[in-house]
Image (cartoon, rainbow, N blue to C red; front, side, top):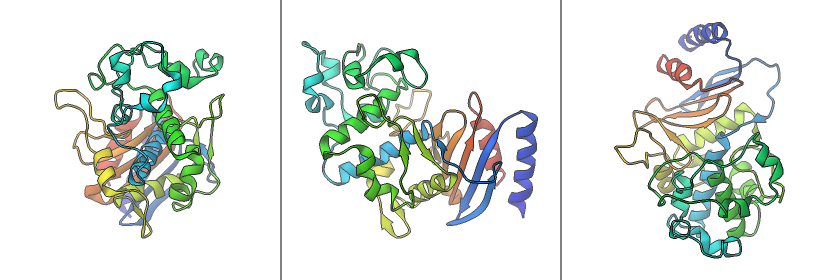
Length: 296
């Protein structure tokens, strides 16, 4: 088969570059046409920032159920955390700004392995104590706290943490049973990363996205929300393409969930294809993956 030969050549290139691939899965027209693993057993691994896209879908589900709107101001739900004199930039912050990484916060804040993460107990309070020196929507700054705050907002609105909220609405319908997701010191779901999944879970999530929010005949999230989430939300003169916690490719048609150390769920509507990758590498390897995808 062509895909097997193409993949063999791709593997050789990755070995030459000392890139460690753990698992690769390709689905097309609803079928798994490639399922490769370096390890003998499929293991749950940290998705890193791929989990941001799961949180985006959680927002869409909460919107479908009437809990959230894109343009509601998040300060209304966290009044107990606001500084004595909050700035206009902070009070004008909306769900849309969190989704698009355009909150106007001065710095990207801590997360992952930063020392400040281990020394800070209340992450919500920490977020609201920051300097929001730009108007919301004025600039893009990738910040894990945006995703974390979306999860905390859903928790506030629905009365349960995002893990419990998503189990019957997303995880179980996607055949992701008893998922693991790390928590902050106060017990809120980490959200921006820390979700542990196997490669099949990547593929099921990607297939749901490819099918406009439907998996195996069951509606998970509205197509209307996904159409927004997976389209470029950045101004045309900005040199990046980003949706609602999804990276949008240069063709403005394909898009991906993208995580640290080479975790990808790539959705290619024109090929009716989903490419899932779990790897372990410093820096991005997306150019190599994209070149591989072009040959399929």
